[in-house]
Image (cartoon, rainbow, N blue to C red):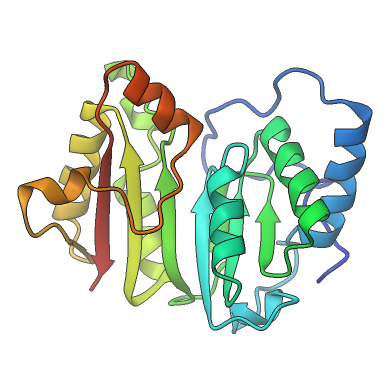
Length: 236
């Protein structure tokens, strides 16, 4: 893996970035794990992306998937551990979430993981065309107030980015418990010529993905009476 890290670079978002970057102060042990983890796993976007993303990983992998906004990294760690022959790139600009992920990744020595600790649009624009097998956007910030809907990550311009980065047949997965964002995503994806919704019957979108470990956000939503939806779109 590269010894370069994106952690020390100033933010260079390609458009307005919305969301927190810092929460409560991290402990010294977490700060040390964050620094060491980003040196080992962080991507250097100042360098050109390799034509074959599989070369980014210390492990030999046959496919590459991206998770945008992995929070504390529970799902990303589960997927990377369960699928050692798949390379995973995780994006999380929230320092506390990245610190938690780097602490766990360093302890377990995940060889099929790379991360980016800034705006996901930077990474999407850096990736070569048709280089990803899958993209996960799981429980993203819903920006529930209507005046903030334009801040939602699902948009025409970001779906264009997804379409460029995904291989034909690649999959975009979206999970949320917020009805307005679920409908928003369905409308945007069904209007985009590159994506085809994979539901075959009404119950499909309420069935968790195969091997789904659940997330703490999902547990909270269910506890509060909200029903999650799991959408899958195929890149034509």
